[in-house]
Image (tube, rainbow, N blue to C red; front, side):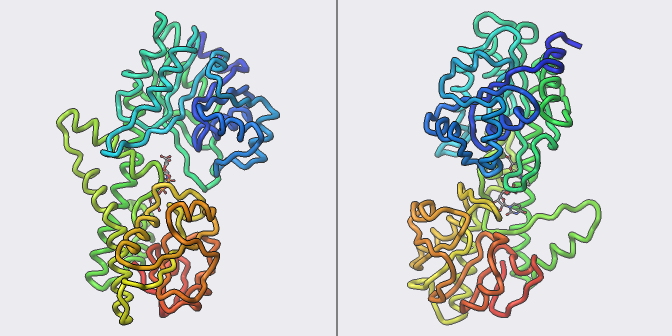
Length: 429
Ligand code: SAJ
């Protein structure tokens, strides 16, 4: 075994985490729980001081877990020079899209610049942010090599995609980790380091293979969600209940994974990640038709849901113009508070643009977040609405009480069908 791999396997080393968001913070807290020292770095001084006071702000890291980590070896800082004390750096920064839906590499580039300033002999540098194949070799390896170091002997570089499933409370250490190093030695060193963080490490032959692995995982989801959204529209046209069809198909014990139709695709992964692959493919003159088709299918769902709501109202002699609509659920998926890239917000904006008066009830999203989007926030069914629209099916809602309190419900999430609930004033996607 490479002597540096043995160090990571056997010694108590220091991890440096760049980016303390929904990926970096869980990684840092987990590393402390696994007996390591952690220097958590973020460019946001506010985030650093909030975390230093023991307030997580990240759904999957309870304040208590953060506070225990702070007492057990986690330090948070906005002073990047502190990262020079780390034996391994884990880059967990955002990889969003620009306004033109192209990769915004500014965060990864900034992290690479930090690496070039703090890297020292023996350091492992791992990129975890979702990105197009080639990023680690083209951006991270040169940064780690700056100062004349050689990757694979003086320093070690790999890519290891983050795998989080927000809101499910799945322990990070239980999620297998894919690792691809720049050369054999980097793979060995990275596998040893990650072997201290998670229970199962799967080594692949290159960083690009690992980068592509992550994009396959999330493109698979985007394409299958696009498929079921198209199937839902077809089923409605054929007067077939798609929720009944999905429940029936789900009885197949092999060869079928359940995906549900909905008002669109939100979050900071599924709507964005496939575009990183599509962009790199286009650079190589390859058109990723499935990615483009899924993007079309998913991005037109908010308008489709608004059309269905308009049809429900016109069936009751009402038009959207002046209709009072209660949007139930704002976050981008059930049982979490995160409303970033939320399709629920897209549906509500279409309804407002078409003349409806909209209020929003989501007990998981703070009122300020709802009002910042220009929606009135309510804390229940006030009975005054013409239609209630289920946009995010949190478990906390009493769906039977909702149906009993409003004239009609449009259920864009199959909340009633999936809970075996019946109400004759509920229409579903
Ligand atoms: N959605 C549907 N129908 C489905 C599944 C999801 O409409 O059948 C919608 C959701 O409502 C949501 C969006 O798609 O708006 C994304 O849903 P998601 O379940 O993929 O949730 P994320 O983005 O928080 O987490 C995903 C991870 N989820 C799962 O593996 C279940 C995974 O794809 C990645 O580990 C993670 O993004 C990431 O960070 O890349």
